[in-house]
Image (cartoon, rainbow, N blue to C red; front, side, top):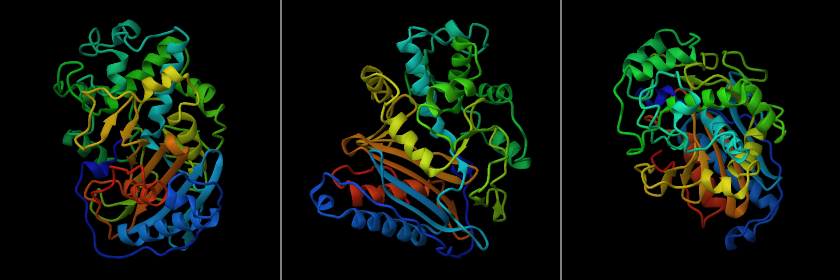
Amino acid sequence: MTGLATMIRRCGPVRTAAVAAASLAATGAVSSPAAAAASPAAQARQVAEVARAAMADLRLAGLIVRVDRGRRNVATVALGQSMTGVPVTPDMRFRIGSESIPMLTTVLLQLQEEGRLDLDDPLAKHLPDSGVPNADRVTLRMLGHSISGYPDWIQGNPAFVDLLLANPFRLWSEQELLDHAFAQPLVCEPGTCFHYAHTNFLLLGRVIRAVTGRPFAAVVRERVLRPLRLGQTTITRTARMPEPVLHAYGTDRGPYEDTSFWSPSWGLGNGQLMVSTVRDVARAARGVLGGRLVSRASERELVQRLPVAQAPLPGVGFGLGVVLAGDWRVQNPYVNNYAGVMAYLPAQRLSVAIVSTRAIDADFDGGNPSEAVLARLARALAPGHPMPLGGGI
């Protein structure tokens, strides 16, 4: 899920956020020679040092990082302030944006295993009256890999961005989002180009609803949230979030302001918008990106690299709703100025959850600072598995 900051150039005067809190826990070992010699406490200190340096270098207001190896916590670090005088804590809730997309594609793979759909089915088979262009030629697999040729309603659509910023509290409907997407020309013929668009995943949510006869929210709770014990994750299309809330800030409308309670409804389809914690995101990284909820054959489909589904960055491709960055499996949302990362490294069973918020002096130039934190953690904890994202910040 792409945030407003990727569409709008932002800047601001200089000020550095203070470090307010740190919470550490440690265990586990790593396979690289340098890391293997480090004690669990030393590994935890590495995570804390990376986080503290990132706070200063990236000019963050708040940062929460959790690193797990298998089921065991390596370190959890919470730094900065959520609001003036309110320290960031590890249990704070935040919007996770596109981190829910691999949950959606996991459900698709489960339904394929059950014989209820096939990823090579055309969209029209399940949504015959959708009115969507090329529905008889675009397959579910094309939607999952973002090679459908469908336009997005927000990326490259300044008219929609203007509407969004004119009233950031507006509750958008699915149909309004689709109408704005398809008011633009198609990007390419089906299957011939990679173009990330939220449109693809909204439509896949509708397919799941059509196949199961149930709202996507109910399906994902049953098939993903409950099996993985994601008890701190809430599905909500409204601005409300359970306490305690990590507050986010931005300059999308000019002044530096609190954007925490802007409507998230512009982002994805019904049932796909969630609020969570780093504990649950790390569990989702292990369970969803690690393929724990599907067969080995389905896991291979989840992370299949199609030649056409390649990003401009070397070593970066796009699986079924999953960014394939070197050896890492990633989702990297930026939604209403919450910069997130959910990442999994199968070779070391390493799960990483990161959320960061910007200080008044930050200028990411449309980038996601949590990617930069992930790249630094990869260098420290898994030097044999570099992270190609985050190098531009």
